Structure formats: structure tokens, C-alpha cells
Amino acid sequence: MLALRVLQRSLLIGGALLSVAFALGGCSSQFADMAPTDAQAHPREPGSYLPVHDLPPDRDQAIIPPEQRAKIEAELAAARDRQAVAGKDAK
Image (cartoon, rainbow, N blue to C red; front, side, top):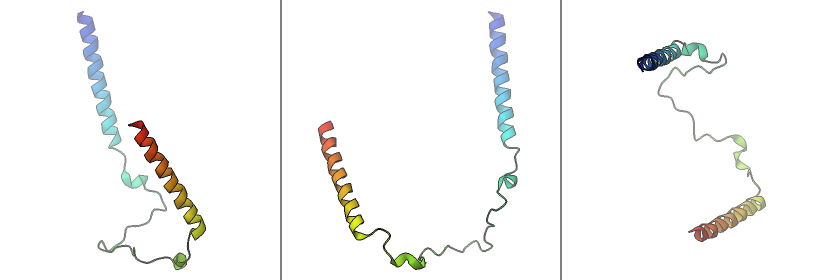
């Protein structure tokens, strides 16, 4: 009985020491070494914002043709209606 308690205590202490070693080992790496070599440098002016209102030049053209857009919207509406009916039946 005493040997079992000693074994449990030594396993508990060993596990605690192992977890502390892993935790401290994770803090030893340098974050600067993990950055990729082609990483973009930080801007020098901290208050500058990205130009979010500038649109690309080809933005005037429709990405999806109107006929295909109408077809997709009809399919989504039909799927929504089917799910609404299935939800009511499940309750």
C-alpha cells in the first residue's frame, strides 16, 4: 500500500516536472526567427489606413451575368422554402 502511494506521488511529480519543462521550452523560441523571409515590413506611419474606397479599374463590369444571377437567386429561394417546410415538419 505504501509502495503504491510512493509510486503515485513520484508519477505525479514527474508529470508536473515534464509539463513545466514543455511549457518553458515553448517560450524559448524567438518569434523573429519564425517570420518568413518575404514578409512585408510594417509601415513607418502608425496612423495610416488602407484605401478601402478605391475600387479596381474593372469593377464596372458585372461579375455574374444577370441571367445566371436570377437563376441562382431562384435556386436559393427554393432551397430556403424547402428548409422552412422541413423545419416545420420536424417540430
